[in-house]
Length: 390
Image (cartoon, rainbow, N blue to C red; front, side, top):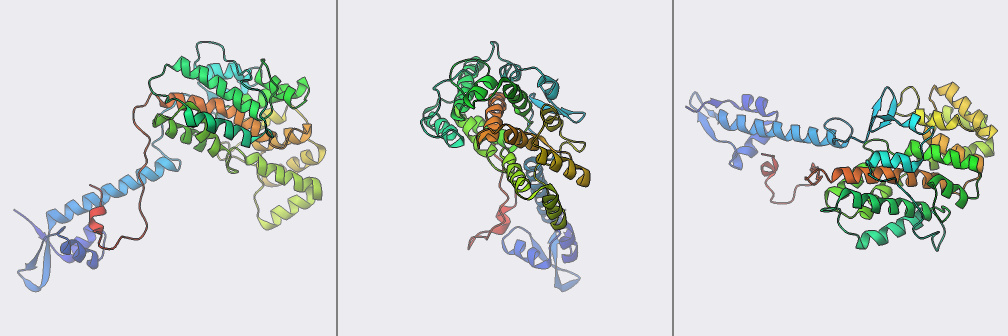
């Protein structure tokens, strides 16, 4: 037997005002009848109200789920690549900072990719015809992406082979020296640097290889989930990485260092603190006690004196430790590396991680396709109630 409830009760269960209840009635979503005890009032079928409330709640849960998925809470994409334990990143269970003490990028890549054979990032075409840098890297990858083969239906070892060439291509685009040999040595040779700098590049690249499910890794995984070619997956990831809030964050630090070199550390620190501006490259939400990657890299060289004093002053006054972006910018400044070298180091190293994410994603059959939550204008004549998710 059907039960009927009052307007007040219907509004309470649905969490809406009376006008919305009237709208549900007019659209046939809710049955109504006159109240036998008071003909000037109406009663509403309780079963219909309960069904509408359930659908509204399901819609809210879906929105919450989608929002949490995209902005940092559970659920997350399963991965066996990188995780954080006791405030330190680990690559497939190995401490990334410890690994960076001696491993080359090639050795770290073999571990991350679980490759059967040693990895070799030999030069695939020499230096680009135009200026070295990200424009050359993106152009070369775009050309390959336009004609590349889908990742679907191909053996992992074949993808590993292709991936080696892609990392070598990225390094070439940023000015790595031609030929064979470990990638840190090729970069140092191409930038006319000493073996000491080559060792710093080796350390930096292993530290920067991956950082769990970053926005660039997510972009690469989306491309891979759709069966895009490996160069297309890498290009999607690197394009996202190039943002100043992500992989090119060292660019903001370099701009800050330029102020320090021009005005002096005391004036810059005083200005930023008095205006409440954050210091680019200090602190990291994943490392409340300090970024171990930044500490490991800064421990291997002395930044220029004015920058060293600036880092010490900011740390003392804010309590925030310099992260890896500060270390990378300081490395470039200290050794006079090319203007785009910081991003070149990051992009070359992170290409290994982006390819690892792309290949790992191939083990999942579903396409990554988040749902949108429309908050715009309702088209004329549209039925608002029809938008309630079922």
